[in-house]
Amino acid sequence: MISLSDHLDELVHEFSKLPGIGRKTAQRLAYFILKQPEASASQLAESLIRVKKNVHQCRICGNITDDEICRICSSPRRNQQLICVVEEPTDVLAIEKTNEYQGVYHVLGGAISPLDGVSPEQLNITSLLDRVGTVESAEIILAMNPDVEGEATTLYLTRLLKPFSHLSVSRIARGIPVGGDLEYSDEATLSRALEGRVKI
Amino acid sequence: MFLTDLGVAGFRNHPDSRLSFSQNVSIFYGRNGQGKTNLLDSVYFLTLTKSFQVSSDLLCIRNGDPHFTLSGNFRSDSGLVSEIRTQVFRPEGKQISLNGQKITGSSDIIGRFPTVLFSLEDRLITMGSPSDRRKFLDSVLFQTSKVYIEDSRKLKKTIRQRNDLLQSQGKLTPSAIDLFDIWTEELIRNSAPVLRRRLRFLHQFRQLLSVLYQNELSGFEQPEIEYKSDETLLGSDTDAEAWLREQARLYRDQELDRRTTLIGPQRDDLLIQLDGRETRFYASQGQHKLLLLAVKIAMWHYLKEKTGETPIVLIDDIFSELDSERLKVISGFLPALGQVLITMTDREKLALDGNFGFFRIEDGRVYAG
Image (cartoon, rainbow over all chains, first blue to last red; front, side, top):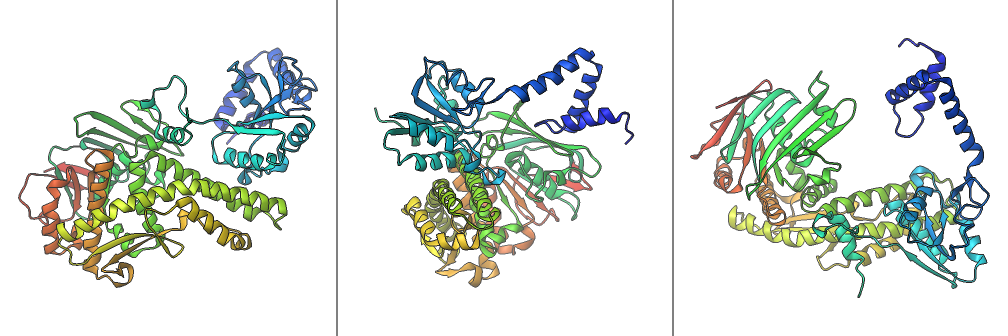
């Protein structure tokens, strides 16, 4: 195939490394940038660099932040004795949207997955242990994804946290979405909901 | 369930075939290699979202075509009409829609249009390897339980993770062994529902099989089908989780030593016997054939009961294998099975009275009559 510009090819190549972006989409994006005024291209480039330079992990919880300690950890209104452990920063956003949760978070940065080369050492687990070691008592809520990797991570953390007698550890419930009709729930969800039924 | 209209475009050797069915029994006839089986496969693909002939969807696309399109109109036992439309594109992509709505997972289709295939490959159930018998189990259970499909997927993923953990390490460190124990727990939890559902199924299926073989097909022997795990027969009252936990304990050292998963339902087998003798080693050709008919008709009954819908029956070329006596027996059965689509080379072979639909297949084209 004939190449029109080495610079353009390079940009296409870089775009195609992004998740969910194939060669064709990468090409479309690159041509779009090419047609844009120089100012907006610079803005994009600077924004990319600023993100890499200024956004990092919160020293306490591992969530992303522009500061040393994230907005949630530094908020005086948050209950520091209630820690919800999640896989990714996007999970924090999801739980925050509920406007119900008043505790703080701990972001692991993934789940245990040998196939993806993710071992417990690569996750923010040591910092979780350090963190719970310094408090007098705390409640830990494990809120991993309900997939195989999330469940293995839950098991791993449960075992790890068991020796701490000052902690109460729970996991989030699984079941029927609120506002969902029983008859429209899929069978797998319904059967999990039956398994996890609660005595009243 | 009744398939009223079928459209097959760019699928295997069919450029563009359209068929309408009105009779219960339809017969596709024609010389070998003309595309009779491909028509059955297109129905199978619509209702079970994959081919029974080839493992890759892409291999179903006609030579030189960019994609294939299958469409089927189905009428349920209660009279509801639904349309499935399935397309597979090169280089990769499958789109399935049900009544015009795109569906995301094949589990939204599988089981809603129950289907039983009779083919020469069935012989693997009584003669083949354990994996062939597990495939049979799955082919029934996938159609009766969405939860089983989900549980099986989860189990498969768990095993891949666990094996990867065992195989990717040089020397197994204490922390890797800790992790191994975590994945063992995960394996037990994800195996137990699969095992439980299989045992429950067999409990019911063996009774169906016995009645069909002895009473309906006049077989002389007593057929038995049992679930075998690690050389032990498990009854329907087995505590699945306790069994798996014990297996995990017994095989822990061996698994760590051989660096692979040695326990779990993905290694189990069925023990199939006639009068207490394992068919794999002792049954005659005739006994195998009769037993397989019974197995498949029992599957039909089981699916009908569990899904509440009469399964569609696809019969691929098994008539050439049957002697006239058995032909008579199966011919007697056919009308009671609901909609049946049959391939055969010779249209006169099934000498039957009755109102059949005939389709002549020639070089990927279909001619009614």
